[in-house]
Each structure stands twice: as structure tokens, then as C-alpha cells.
Image (cartoon, protein in one colour):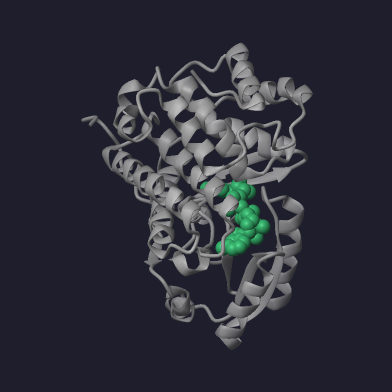
Length: 352
Ligand code: NAD
């Protein structure tokens, strides 16, 4: 433990447990809201309609156009619906894409947000928004972005496809792993990171074996909460910079990109952050990058950027963007080394 640290809490009200979505109406009353606009992706529209029907007159509309990486054009379209429905709050019901849209609306309108996360992305507990405009993902941090209330209902994750569940769980783990060596980490963020990784390390293989395993679904969502909290509290490093670059500028799938980059980025950093990462040896063995690679391979997620559709000819441009304004990293961010990292990730090579 470091004996010099700063600790700041970004507090959202958390409701956790099976069936708790039924309390959404009470939460609206708590926030003094009575005209909720529900947000979903296109594929989760039926779930949004179900919630709208359950809320009755408390819901004034449904915008089912959320997409990945929060493009500003989609936010503009949703703001039109906010205005035409005279909504006094948003309920983001879905994964990180839907949550990002709710945050983008809240940032511009100051409307309160209730979030019902249905993946493990962890965005619901962060004051961070990554918006895409003109092919670049711009990260914003503002207290207004942090949702007021989060309803974690593991029942809503039981039908999350296994492939999405695995990649999304690794996305959550990535927040905690980078949080362990963050410059501004504190003893509480470290406890949360270790507990979050441990919960997901146990839950993901159990979900893979039986996607309807309620206890494992609950543990995974609990882990996602902890890992997301770490993301919202401390700074991220090379791994997140690479994923923001590959998602924002090359359109790669968010969670799958995290899954591919994670073993490579952790291998890059593990010698420079040996003490901070040491507690993970009991989960992943003595070489963290290699151990993570084996874990992700076991979960059946894609292992290479090539499999995600990135062209090899894009690696130079990705290296350039990722190294231009690098996030702080425990190991120096050098162009040649990052290029080698991306080559290994493109091929899906197991780190040594
Ligand atoms: P997503 O929200 O796009 O969801 C993936 C797909 O799964 C979507 O088609 C969605 O409709 C579907 N889905 C979600 N939950 C489901 C369920 N329970 N059952 C069936 N289908 C379901 O993907 P994601 O990985 O959760 O989020 C990615 C986005 O989140 C990116 O834009 C990323 O930048 C953002 N993000 C932001 C933060 C932050 O703190 N700002 C953190 C993590 C991720």
C-alpha cells in the first residue's frame, strides 16, 4: 500500500440484485422525474418497449438508435426526441453504447440519468464519455456525465450472448488491470480492482459453461461494477489508448478489441509494474501477458486484430495515432515498441 494518496468518490446510487428493474418507477420518483425517455440500441428495442409499458405514463418515449462509440450525429438525433417529448430524464437500458448516448445527452442538457446496464462494460459508474466525431474518439471527463442511479439486475444479462459476455467481461477486467498500475491509484481502487478481476475470473468460465448460471451472472455484474468504478476513479494507460484508437478511428468492436489487446498491453507493461501486478500471479501465473492470453483463448474470444477485420496496412496509422498524445504509462510509450505490440495483436501471437 502507498502511504501517500488522494481519494475522491464519484458516487452514483446503486441498486443491485435480481428483479430490481421493477424499482425503476420508484427511482424516477426519488429523482423527482416523471417524463422519462428510454434509450436502447435497435436490437434491444423490444426490451425498451417492455420497460416503457411497465412505466406507463412515467415514460414519454423510446429512442432505439444508440450505436457503438457514441457518434455525435446520433446524439443530435436523440436530442431532437428529448426536446419533442419534453423528457425530464433519460433511462439508458443496455450496454456501453446506450449508456454513452445517455451520458452525451446528460452532458448537453443536465438531465438526470438512470442506467440499467446489460453488459459488463462498466461505463455506468464513470464520469467519462468517449464521443466520435470526424473519425476520432474524443474522451471527455465531467461530473455531469456520471449517472445518478444504476440498477444492476443480473436477470437482464442471462440472455446476453456468450460471445458478447466473454468479450465484455474482459473489457471490464481491462479497467481494473490498468487501474492497478495507475499513477493516481489509491488503496481503495486497488482493493476494488483486485476484487473485480477475481469475480470475473471466476464468473466468465462458469458463464461459458452455462450461460444461465444465475450466480455466475450476478458475480460477473458485481465484478463489472467494481472494475467500472476503478475506471471512473483513476487514470488509464497504453491499453485503453490503443483500444480508443482502434475503436474510434478504425471502427473495431469495442469489447472484442479490449479482449485482443489486453494480453499484449499487459505483457508490454508487466515488467514496469511488477509489484502492482504481483497479486494477479495467483490467477494468471508468473507471466501475466501469457496467462491472460491463455485465459482469453479458453473463453473463445477472438485473439487477433486480423480476426476483427483490421487490415495489416492500418497498423502504421494506428501506431501513429496511439503514440501521438499517449496516456501516462508505466513503461515508456515508444513508437517502435507499440508498432511491435500491434503487430503481435494483429497476428494473435501469444506473448512470451
Ligand atoms: P454495446 O452496448 O454496443 O452492446 C453490444 C451488443 O449487445 C449490442 O448490439 C447490444 O444491443 C447487445 N446487448 C447488450 N446487452 C444485451 C443483453 N443483455 N442481451 C442481448 N443483447 C444485448 O457494447 P458494450 O461493449 O457494452 O459497449 C461499448 C461502448 O461502450 C463503446 O462505445 C465504448 O466506448 C463504451 N464504453 C464507455 C465507457 C466509459 O466509461 N465511458 C466504458 C466502457 C465502454
